[in-house]
Image (cartoon, rainbow, N blue to C red):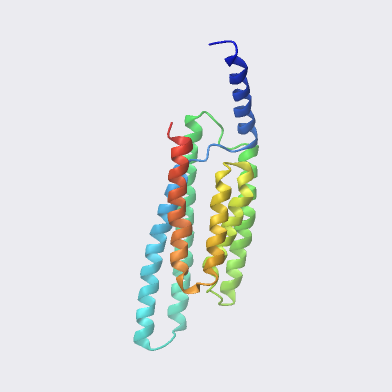
Length: 210
């Protein structure tokens, strides 16, 4: 190794140490891919249930409160299961990457990341349940996209900066969906499914492949 290369390598080592101390860099691209797959599975089930509900709606010739309540709770249960599956798979791939790189998965940086991620998500979840309480279900999908996008933008300060752009796209999709209410399930598939898979694949290629 030549002498003039040593200071450059020292600077690079210092940069890596500073990144590890200020940002959670163990987030795996496969976490995004797995979350996207979970979301698309959820969209498929939701589409089947909603389609069958509207067939029964046409057969009855009108609205049935019991049937609508059943559909609502089925969709809420599905959302909880899909969310839990996405979180668990994301944690697994992140833990695997952290172990491979010999980095801690739980430290002060990851705590800041979780806190800043959860604040908008919890607020959005309470807002959604408030809308359900008043039977205002039309804007649930855009609200989920917008609050989730805000959560990603808020958390991007403590992890890979690319997360910020994903958050901005999620917010944009949510705002567009406000004017296309009848297509909420398609926006959900695009924002939580396809976008996650595309982003996760790009992040895996950029950060994890080596």
